[in-house]
Image (cartoon, rainbow, N blue to C red; front, side):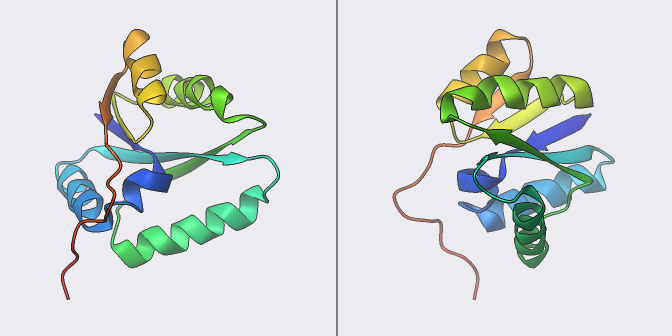
Amino acid sequence: MIIGFDYFHTINEFPELMSGLSLLFHNQGHKIIVVSGIANIHDEEEYGYKICKEMDAFGFHFDKLRIVMFASPIEVPVLKLAVAQKEGINVFFDDRKDVVDHFNAFGVQAIWVKRSLTRLPTKK
């Protein structure tokens, strides 16, 4: 299977949980692709470097990072789905309900990672 994860408010909101899931999927031989959206006012390469560094620090295992650039947040569901379909993603984790609903409407299983008001405790 190919498992997809959003980064912002998903991996970085629950780094220990998501890193554990990524390790579990990785150890079972699944491919992991991170699909992250960012406003097109930012530098794509700099953003990619930053989140790769953060995911490495979290211990998040992934095979590929795909960044979608958007002018308006309303574009994100369509842009992320296009990447998911091109990459053959079977299951996708995202914090945005509109993204999850859009994926599910087009037959790609998506799981809503509800944002927390406070982050889960991390091990010390």
